[in-house]
Image (cartoon, rainbow, N blue to C red):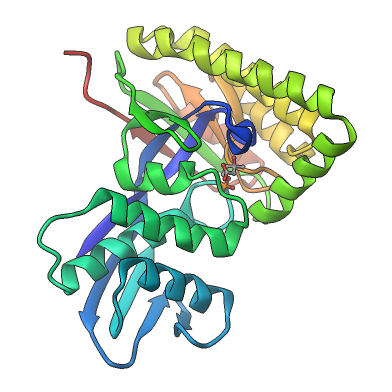
Length: 299
Ligand code: PMV
């Protein structure tokens, strides 16, 4: 059995596609995969079954993953603990858990991180077109990390565990479509979008200290400011804005969407008790849960 975590993006989505830094964290919920040698190669994820040559998107992603691992003739069954398309890294967690299970089933002696990441990136490329790699990297490494496209991840030390409340504030959206929408805006208003990306990058830089010291009031403010930038980019929705406002009113230190936006999940940084935030969301009929991000503390 192999596992991979899901993810939240604390700061920096979209800007990360263009080489700016972002901060993400693995969450406990993710995907679990089991693989065994079989000449009838297939991938089963919940109700969906795909074969490498069936032409479906899932089948093509599975094929790309197997090709990157240089493995044939393997069957995989995955159970997913996250809603897909909601910015919680469901796709990348399926990819990483699948790749791990395949490597186990084929007797790979040591987990080869680079090979695993290359396989997950090949998979993500089918679904997302232009993935920065932050989802696959976070699914593979977990913990809290700073990520820069092409340069990889730097683990970040947390002074204290982060309690994050997550709400699904709307139906899933296509990451590909949202990333393309930002690309179009960047084409029509390059300096405006560059200013937004620079602003987001400054928030990422300022987050290192409060993450390390546990000064989460400041971290919450940085998340709120990031949400303002995401609204300016046009990737938030009224339902996401309302869910963020609900969380802040109920005592959250900060709230923002996570992932590509257009629907799906928002996250709120909470200090216990978390119930007021969850109750506010439940009163709106939103599905929600709490996750804790812990990471090794500074030596
Ligand atoms: O796949 P999502 O919806 O969690 O979005 C990932 C973050 C983006 O920055 C929007 C895309 C990317 O590849 O970095």
